[in-house]
Length: 115
View 1 (cartoon, rainbow, N blue to C red):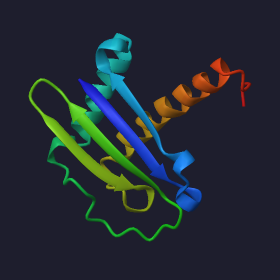
View 2 (cartoon, rainbow, N blue to C red):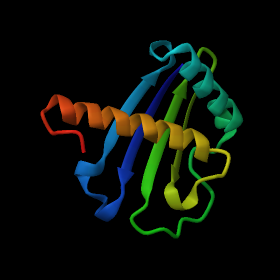
View 3 (spheres, helix red, strand yellow):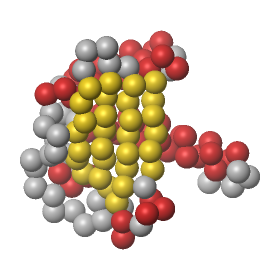
View 4 (tube, one colour):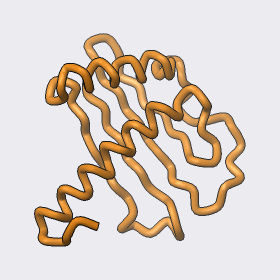
């Protein structure tokens, strides 16, 4: 299973805030891969509409485009902080945690410190 998370928007929707991460379950620990698969299943991800039908009233909210590819499915769903279906929230939070760790690692590799 591979998951691509694209996050955009945020304060003023600056292009520099657009970030992407690809997570391959085969590159995760067994426990993390199991957790990720559970989150996808619990989110009923493959049953989610391509775009959230929930009204978004949040200014400067992040938008998330999540694509999941597994042996049987390929599906993309787009949601935002202000209009996120409850069942998708745990998956999005897990993915954004991975994104944050990835960005922190890249910053450290560039000599940007450990903020």
